[in-house]
Image (cartoon, rainbow, N blue to C red; front, side):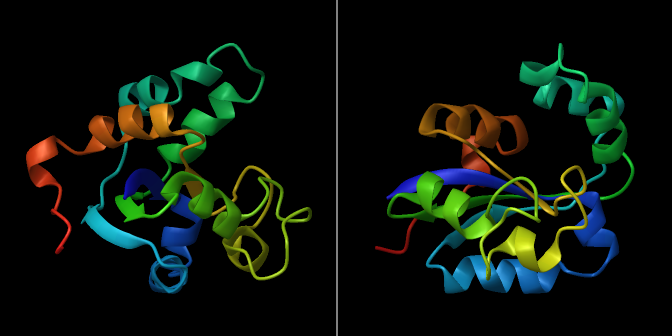
Length: 141
């Protein structure tokens, strides 16, 4: 079993889409192993998205991610990283496949409802950013 990180972003939280998104993830065969709600500080958002620091959208990304509550969660399942990326759809909801989370719930390319780790290595780093190992629920098997 593989683990990955998803973050329900401020746009989806404020629009009360959290339950629908979680249900979508679970229906796709991803199990929640840890979940919490918080509001990122600017320092936390800058650290989490540091890989994008030199890009033109970095400042607006940090502003957006600190604009309201977010819900990071650890998801587990066979091929969880790739599966989650498939389930959420393309970054731009206009390009996302029908039935994906972003097609259903995103407002725009920037306000796109959900973040997902892009590789197993990134997932490990991102999971550790939000969840100490002892907070993760073990698989029931």
